[in-house]
Amino acid sequence: MDNQTLKAFAGLEHLATAVMLLNADSQVIFANPAAEILFALSSKQIVGQSLSQIFPNCDLLMDAVQQAISQRSPFREHEFFITTSRQLSLAVTCTVTPVDIAPACLVLEFQQMDQQLRIAREERMLIHQQANTELLRNLAHEIRNPLGGLRGAAQLLEDELPQTGLREYTQVIIKEADRLQSLMDRMLVPHRMPKYQPTNIHEVLERVRSLLLAEAPQNGINITVRRDYDTSLPEIIGDREKLIQAVLNIARNAAQALQNARTKNAEIILRTRAERQVTLAKKRYRVAIRLQIIDNGPGIPEAIRERVFYPLVSGREGGSGLGLTLAQTFITQHHGMVECESVPGKTCFNILLPVESTALKNGSVRQ
Image 1 (spheres, rainbow, N blue to C red):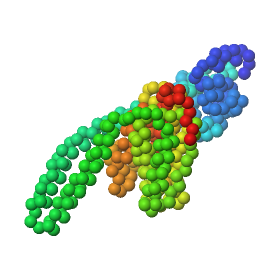
Image 2 (image 1 turned 135 degrees about the horizontal axis):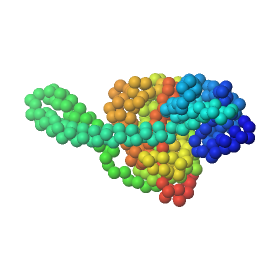
Image 3 (image 1 turned 60 degrees about the vertical axis):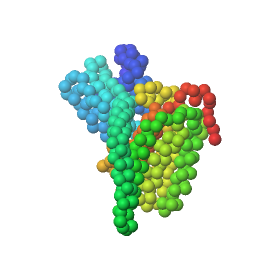
Image 4 (image 1 turned 90 degrees about the vertical axis):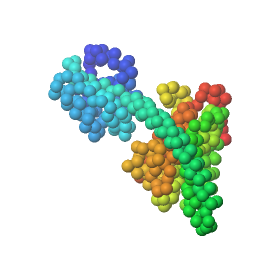
């Protein structure tokens, strides 16, 4: 590119938006610093390469370029995934604009959508979670009252029965009423106010790990529960018991999936890492803790993968479908979020928990 053209496009270097210039042969002749940062490629790795070399197998982008060229007008492709030659995958919106400044033929402007998509997904999850919580609360209250009357009537009937053998049937009623009562109590647990206090997330994980290892032999399965901790993480302000229950519900689901599939070399990994500059529930946090619960089981069935946090949705026979719903509720009460990624052979639950400024002032906590 000659000096005159460089001068014409010099302002592009200062843009926060990723910009590339193509010549008539669809070769990149310029990439601004924002493009280098977005695609994790240096200018030397971009300039001189064809678009198909930088973004292999991206038919949508190639179609957008062809549309802009054939129509001689700007063309925009909204919210699609693009993968670079270094296997970095991003969600972007791309605007392709024809220009008449030789040797440039096209201007490609990329806007990253990952953050916006994640925030939108988080908002949808929060709305669903609030609706589910309200539904469960109302359902539990509606069932508890007649359930108590049903159990009381069965007890009175049992006392009046002339034959002792008939009490077997009233005992069935009483035991089933007790089982439903326990289920209703679990539905109402999230509505008890959390008791917030400084909490070490690794103490929570160690409690969960000890419970998993104690329960595994009883369930007839040998599971390795591996630690992968960043012990420099600071404390968070949270309800220790609710956090234990949230992580335990997810980890127990993993253990049961491994047991049902009779997975060889069954393993659950508990991992912690720091995340910087995280937005949760529209609030920006300087530091957050990423907690991952990973198992090498068969994965979540595709039919319920998008609904695993919905109440009464379970992938196993006999499951109540409340464990993950309650886990999501407890995490939300801590201003965090939980997501799931699952393929056969690997399921990963990602929990993000913000670190409040008060915890940061207290410094790091090491074990």
